[in-house]
Image 1: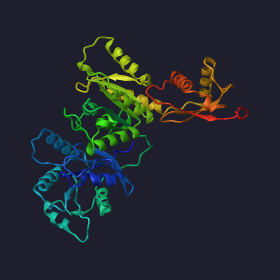
Image 2: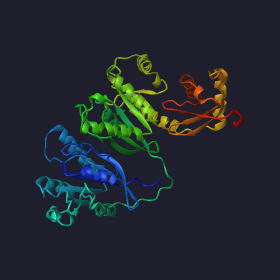
Image 3: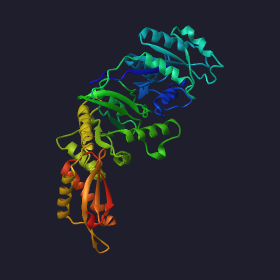
Image 4: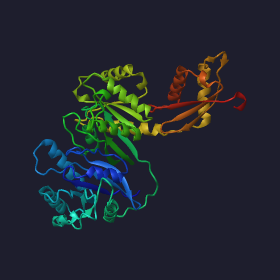
Length: 443
């Protein structure tokens, strides 16, 4: 097994362009960028590569010095944690502002950390005509590198300097799939607290203010011999309630996190009635082809007996029959009760989502299902199921060849899918069924 990827943290005062630089290096708009301070609060991980050297790049919130506001203190703690984890630090300053007292305080912190530091002077869009980078020599952190995060000018020189400071990484013995597990749900159901308890450390800012997590926060870790990325997402509100700006882009990033996840852990507040939005999020996840585990949080606050959990699960699935096959775990993010069981359930779903069934076995099951219930007639003709095979995984996708594709009704296709679930135990996994036309004499 090869060593973990090295980590590079981006730090600096608010609004100096850290997230813009992060997005440019990652190759997409993974971090929220808005022209006002305080938008990025957590450590946001993204995998980058330069000159054949892969590494994790970490976007952090703006360093605000000695502010006593509880949220600002939490953000500062997250920045210090990012520096502590980093193999190298990119310290970004604003070339238009010149050196500030805030920059001096951050430089002092970085010198004390002992980490290699690349000093990056941003917003020098007309370099080399403008040379404000020389004003930052006094920070005592070596050669200031000019860059424009907005245009990308100078980024290559910065990345050359970054990889020069990274430790050598042994080649992997074998390539392993890195599973993305996303923690999703409505605002303030305990997603960040759940993720923190699961990871065993404070990886994201937790607050009782709804909407504290704005980005989708990627945290790589290793569990039970497997490389995983846990994605803590912003809460998904009803579309009519999503405002413009930061909240809109937070919702967009959560949607993208669902699209790239292997499995989603959907947190539901067990102290409240199940919301329609909970069910919409669940259905959206399955539509994306993502595996799903329902996680009833705050279970420690419920008065219960031996039948309470079964009654609660039955109530949820009666409201949404499409979730009948989805496993449910009852947890407390506050106490840590069963949070690991939720992750175990997610990994089991991921394995089922990657399962491939041999073609003879598929056709044997199709034959049994036909004997129990024949397909309906279509325009006076008998509909025949001629042949079936599994065409893909993640999610499992099956193709059925028939003489009358339009004759297979939605109800009969649902009957076939339910039969597949009973035969192969695809609990928590969306299944896709494609119908293709084929002549009987070609079967």
